[in-house]
Length: 334
Image (cartoon, rainbow, N blue to C red; front, side, top):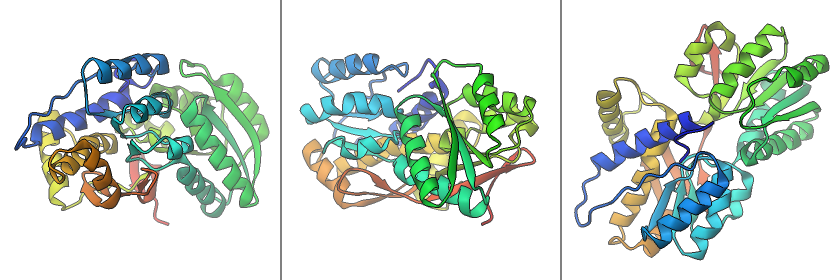
């Protein structure tokens, strides 16, 4: 996972959940060894790490694989070596065909893009839209899905502006978007990029309504933005912080005691990334080859809710719309 660099906050949130699952797991027959590596959000680094994990450490499975760019880079290596891979958040539509040994517990951007497009057109009454996107596999894949679905609804895309993972100044792109006078602006970014974009957006007095994907789901970041975050909508896989399910309660209690805060969706996805793999192994006598078949043919209830995989290893999950009002995140009423 990216534990340093532009996506460090995402990677470390997922890792917190993985560590909780590892601590809670009762190893009835084998010791499960957890090897942690930092890919720095760099595909070349991730390829070197993956080859090292498989050839030198002799791992049987690789989890985490947070960004789509990393998952796309290493999935062919996993398939070649028949090494199970389970991603917490990779969402590029291209990963649907990543191979028989690759699974993910976050929905494809194809689905997320359609939800964002339908919500913009039907609920926000937007007839025109612009996109400000991170220019990587995640950003491009989600942008393409949103654009296709928004246009299919009868909407018009005015502007598409990309930026690099290391960008901090977005005024040039935002000026172009301001001049377009779009009804809605889809912002696809990570971590502190959102803070810079939203602050600059407000300073430039742009009036488009803002929508975003799950990477905006960061309580600490929203608190830092304060009033600047009000009025923003974002999507995320359904996540019930009040769930009475035993697995969620176990996860929540352990997490709250250790970190003195409520677990986020990313924490829960990290937990499930480990939990699903280990539960599958326990049900097939710790056979990694049989674990793949078990994952395909069974549903799971984890910390992030109910999950089932289709034949491509894509997860089937509900998506919800969240709204920020008075500096608080609430579920969108409609």
